[in-house]
Image 1 (tube, rainbow, N blue to C red):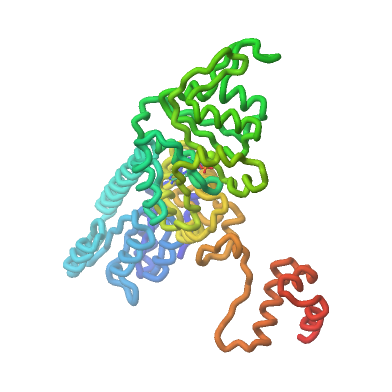
Image 2 (cartoon, protein in one colour):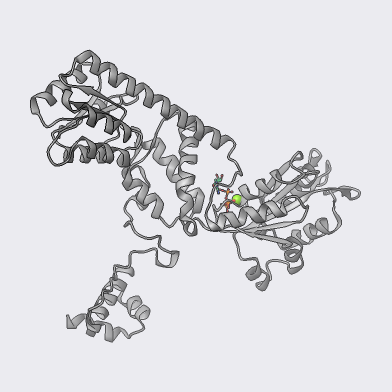
Length: 468
Ligand SMILES: Nc1ncnc2c1ncn2[C@@H]1O[C@H](COP(=O)(O)OP(=O)(O)OP(=O)(O)O)[C@@H](O)[C@H]1O
Ligand SMILES: [Mg+2]
């Protein structure tokens, strides 16, 4: 297998990569010369096995392979390309007597074939045509992804049970004016969900206004929500229309509603009950017609218990509750989210990255995503920025992800690799030993904590350690 001919190290967009496969050394070398002189990026393989390795490792655009080779023939290379590089096109080289075979290969999805003896010009034209076709295919895909990013049908992408249930409830509750409480961990799409409710409601022609209640200091939050008259307090040099009034006829999202200070919770409750607001320093209530959606990632019931959230306000907000499922519980949606985000960030950073290597995809599909969709989004954006070629590799992912062992999605409580492997046939003694070692690893050698976690005394732990 040859090294990559210098093409990937150059500045500018990478040239499409051609994989040449032939078991006749001299023939392979002359093909390599032809394509290198014509300016292609070329890698070569002397047999089918090497060709498959190349396909696995490099973002191959076109494969030109001999049909008849010992062990792994051109048919097998074609099959491997279809799995490993679905967008790569395969051209077969065949002796005159075996054209029938070549036609079979075309039926199986090969792009074209050339007959031996190979003529330089015919070969170059054939490969150019293949590349043009592939370019068009990619542009099409890119356009589709872009279209999807601008106007995703349904906005909330996902087809897992959790998302289907959520979307069904959303469509049911959207048309009413009922208050909705959206619960969910950070980054699960609460704001996007609120926008979707608005979009599906008969208020969609009106404004959608969002306030992040956690981001604003108490005094400013009050003025933001309810507005103020000129001179209402020192510094109020002009009249300010509050967000409630700005959302009139539409929807107001109170994001991070759990962070509203208690004093303001009373005022908010009154607005919700009376459907009118009073500007600070104002001389009377102003009627409003606003649908309120509240969102939070905190446990409001716990906050009520602790006296930090008013129970009456909670019941006012909690007419309909939507629970956003965390991404780790809907890993099926990751393959749907990835192309959307790839399209979005290709656009934003003016790149034309086509996809992910198998390794990168494995990691992206099995990560536990404590930061949910936002974390996935950040990982893809980072990778798009760092990736110099067409395929996002493991090394472009955040180190915390790239270094993680690949396996079933861990739940947050077991997101560390415990290293404890139970196999039938292990003795109790071996099991105990494994439990101690795994816990020690988890506590980074803290013996006190290890003993506590295992429910044994420190002395017992030392004794067990000494026994080995
Ligand atoms: N189902 C989804 N489909 C497509 N994009 C999504 C989905 N869920 C979330 N996103 C995207 O992920 C990002 C985070 O979503 P959003 O801001 O709505 O989450 P959030 O729950 O409000 O987060 P936080 O609690 O941090 O405020 C946004 O860019 C959003 O567009
Ligand atoms: Mg939010």
